[in-house]
Image (cartoon, rainbow, N blue to C red; front, side, top):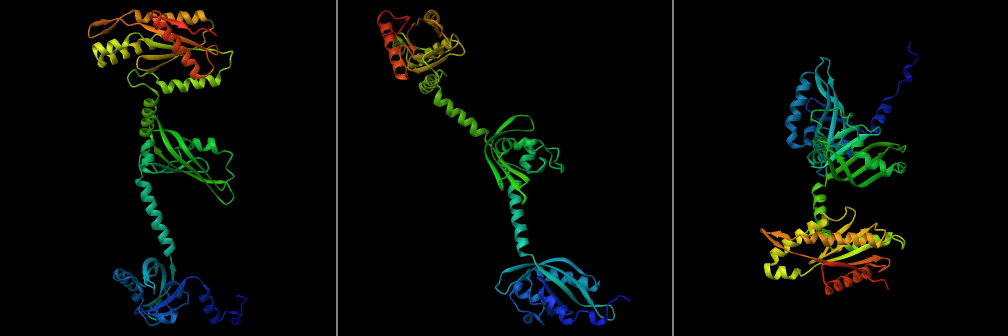
Length: 422
């Protein structure tokens, strides 16, 4: 005995009520594919009441271009008395839009064990299907993207690399196990900037980073790293997208150089000079001095007037190269404009040291310039101002050095003078 009386069995009404309460569409069709039963949930699914379906062929509600395929599948299953498993097809809602359905059904057998219909459950998978389509679209975009796109688990193991990322890191397409690819290769900036922000629901780092490619070369990238959190606030996984900005960086370098360097002599220009002078003055007190040497080429106008600007430019390039090779590495030499140059010198403890240095600069012009196998004698005049004795701002230091340089020119050229202390 099973310990249960017959009157303990649930009634038919109970089962009918149960069927009406479920969220899935339960139905039955006969051997002519006509509905003989449907629960009321069909109205939520297709917009028709259960009574409107009774006696009507299931194929009236199937999308037209899927009817023949579905008929063939069900007919084959009927002949074999077999069940229908996870059958996907499209039905048409009363309002005309598509409803994606997943069906599972078992055959209804007569006394001769022959299928005379089906009894089953339909599930509306429209939302899931749309999400699948959307996910596939996103995956197609990600797979086709030229950017580095990757994900990693909370332990730092890489779980996904798109083709561009694989190519960047030298990971063959066929390699499925990516755990050997340490995510620190691309999450270093996130860890550096966000280690104290992991309690946030979603931590996002955006900025510029440097990644190493498969050849060990450093590649500058513009990168976004997202820390995805689970409900308990622990990091669930990380994702990133990074774009190679090598060309942009190279262009920025060119633009920066054009902005700060003289195109003819390749020495720093006037803008770079004022920037450097401003920084020097900000970092200096009146105990730590530096010298500003205003260098002007004597009678340079004659070269331009007699030989032309082409030779004048060549002479300036030779002069700049000669001076650059004669000054100390830590000193700042620039072309102010025309035939004028500025040299900033730090670390000269006495005026005697400074005079010796200036004398060596004047001496480098004692050797004529050679252009087209001809020699041209050139000299220079130098005016010197010292911070803070001869000025505590850029303008005063420049004016005093310029003034004493012109005084030098009037009194004989080819030499140097230090600004007189007031």
